[in-house]
Amino acid sequence: MNFGFNSNVRVGNALYHVQTEDRGPAHPFLDTVVYVAGRVVHKRSTSYEDLNGGAAEQEALANQLHERLSQQHREVMAQLEAGTLQLNEPGGAPAKVVAAASGEDLEVRLLNPKTWLEAGKATLEVELRNKVSETAIGGADVEAFLEADKKRSAAIRTCADTKGHAILSFPLPSAVADGTALVIRATDGEHYAELRFRLKAKRDENDPAPASK
Image (tube, rainbow, N blue to C red; front, side, top):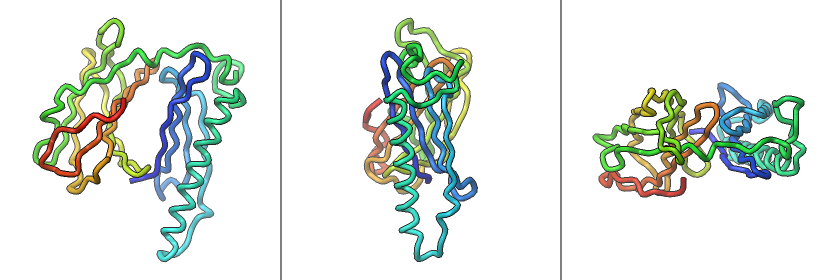
């Protein structure tokens, strides 16, 4: 599992999603991506190849890496809120002049909350709807992953059909720490939404207790 941070930042009428993650030793960079209404408007990538050492130093290096990741995430959010972050939009406009986002219109629904886990395999039947009109949102990218102690698993990804339905299947680890979050995200390029469930430590209790959306 890799380190990662995810935050929503509202600036005026616009809602931004800031995602910072470490993709692992094969890609030794800390990547931050800023989304608004499902569009990528800012990217930042910094190398941490200078952090290396023997096995005895791995814990200390992990702590340093986590602090760098947290600092980069905080810096991008602070610049976003201050209106000094240059965005990849016409004219490179700062955050304060971006039009209102429509990301809050998308709703992610889990259709099988009682039966999603069977024999150690997670099968998430997802439906995407517009909150206001209740119309299906098809063609959206959907992903799911586990998040615990500021670390995340590799994401499982698929695409919703024309009726806004998608199925994500993957084996669940044999040991899941209490408080681990099952995260389901979706974006169609104009909308962005996230659904979170807090998993229970006991594997015989298949029903995840809702955390925060």
